[in-house]
Each structure stands twice: as C-alpha cells, then as structure tokens.
Image 1 (cartoon, protein in one colour):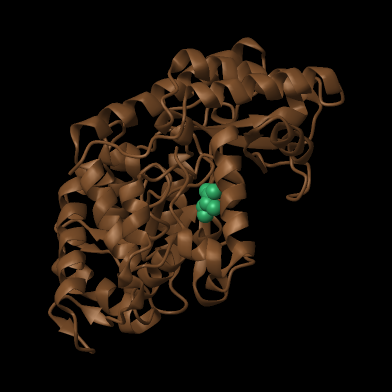
Image 2 (cartoon, rainbow, N blue to C red; image 1 turned 45 degrees about the horizontal axis):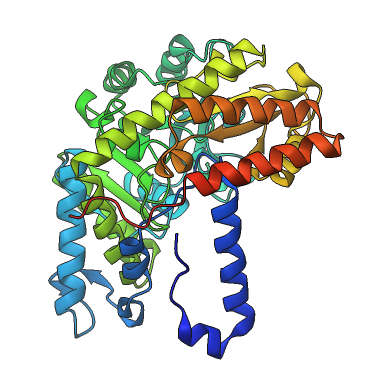
Length: 426
Ligand code: DSN
C-alpha cells in the first residue's frame, strides 16, 4: 500500500499526520486478526474523506429539511439501491452512524418502553446492545436471553429459546452475535417467532460481507423481517451502520422515523457515499470469492487449533471467527495472549468464553478471524502458518528470541502480501 496522500494535513497538523503515518505502518507491518476489522479500498477512503462531510441533510432523499441536496440525494439513493440488491430486500436505511445506533433505532421503531426482547446472552456470543445490563437500553426494555445448549458444539438451545418466547411473549426475537462461530438456524427462529407473534431481527454486523458474498445463509431467505448491521466488518466498507427491511413497508416506515427524527440528527453523508462505493464493490463477482476464502481460511486455522488441542468454543467455526479458550488449553490468560501476540505483530482481542470463570478484563479466551488477512490475499496455507505462529507465541510468551523470530516472519509475510488499494471496479 502506498502512503495516503495528505499534503495539507502534513503542513497544517504534523501531530495528526504523524499518527496517521504510524497507523499506516502498523497496519502494513502487522497482521490484523480482529474479526470485526478489515481494510477498505482507496475508493472507499476517498469517498469517506470527501466534501460530503460539509453537508447537513436531515430527512431522506427528496424530503430534506435543508437546501442544496442534489448530490446527497444521488448518493443516498445509490447506497439504498445497492444495499437492497446486495441483501435481497425491499427497503434500506443507510443513515445509522454505526451498529449500536442502528440497534437502538430498530428497538425504538418496533417496541414501546417496557416491551420484551429475546436475544443471545452476551456471555454466549451476543452483543452488549442485545440487552446487557450495563447498557441504557436495559433500563428501557425488558431483555430476556437464550444461550448455547453446549459451548463445545455451539448449538443454540432452541428448546429453551422457544420456552422463553412462549413464556415472555417478546416483541422481537433477535438473532445475531459478535463472538459466536456457528451458523444459526434462522428457520427455527422464524417458526418460534410466528408462534408468539414476534418480529424477527438479525444483527448480522459480523457476517454481512459473508451474506453479501453468499458464503453463508441470508436470514431474509428464511423469512426474517429486519436486519441490522455495521458496514465496516466483513462487508469492507466505512465505519457505519444500516437497517434493512425485507418487505414490510409499515416496518420500513417505522424504522425511517425512528432513525430520523427519532434518534439521530444529520446523517454523515461522506460515510453514506463511502457505503455506496463499498456496496458497489461487494456487488462485483470477485467479492464472492473473497467471502468464500474467508471461510476456507478460518477452517484452516480451526484445523491447526484442533490439531494442537486448543479448545474452541462451539467446537470450531462456520464463519470468519474463532473463539479459543487459551486459558483452559495453554494456561495463558486472554489478556496476556492479546499482549504477547500484539508484540509479535498479530492483533486480536481477548474475549470472555461461555460461562467464563475469569473476569471480563482478563478473560479465558481470545477472539480472532480471517477477514482482513483474506483481503490481504492470504490463502489456507498462510492462515495455517499464522495459527501455528499464534500458538507458538502463546507457548513461548517469555522467550524473547523465539518472539523475535516470529516477529520477523510476520513482517516478511506482510511484505509478501501488501494491503491492496483496490478491488474490482463497480
Ligand atoms: N466491537 C465490535 C466487535 O468487535 O465485534 C462489535 O461491536
């Protein structure tokens, strides 16, 4: 990757431009294994840094509250049209600022304060915004939870989910996760929701790119009503969010009203322009290959972890991520692992495992994934080697010379697979 051209910034603000150069080097010379991160194309970066950042455009295309909307309307319409094509749905709201705001707007669109929402337990792979007690949301809505039946297989306890749904009568049944590695049985969710009259929502932030690339099932194909997502993970767009509605105009209208004026002010139009560019890239045939390769690469890492007898929550992976119990298997805590792996140029995050005996700030697990290294061009062979290097690093956390050798090997791998600047054009 060549350096981003930032001549004005270099002149006006050396402190910030220096930090940007530092981040460029960090990204270029290290392996990004955080499963929610990726590298965007230069085209996405340019749209995200465009003059649209100057514009206020409250409202929706053709119905704005301020003048001068010819071009904002164009980009928002294009983003909506591409999103609907990509995910096979009728309506898209591309204004949510990120995943958490998308979920907040969705809850307020579909529920009244006090209503019940059934979602995946955080400790079993769910997300904070699915109703963890530390969130403001938990003070407003009544969140109830489902879990895995067995953390070693990852299967959701659909009987418990159904019993809870029958007893609690949720308004929403929420499928989706941020640290869960198995495919969900969307049809079962829909069946249960129909029994109790709930709306089905999938928070597919992590797997949006895999769905767009048809590497995993699209919840809409199994009858889900609504999807919320971020746009910057596997989907490889700018930081942002989006809410999709399969076919109900009534739901889509409620969602639009909830995003604006219910919750947000002016949309970030530069980000919406960048979303449109990313969706265009995802509509290209090459994106399917990338999505499939993410899965193959994750499987290659899974095999190596299985061979080395490192326990994986869910027993392995069907998607882009692996959650490994490194404390149970290697005697290193998640925090120690994160720190030592960072030292040798492999960035990932510590993560609680199901029913973790350790505290959240120093849990038993690490979470890692293959989207960013797949974007870099890694195949199964490189991914298996990365998995091996990860385990070697954790096993030799205090051995300086081993760590030095590993750091060197990572640097060489990075040189061989530079971060690409573009994918196929729209
Ligand atoms: N922070 C995101 C992740 O890493 O999964 C979700 O919010």
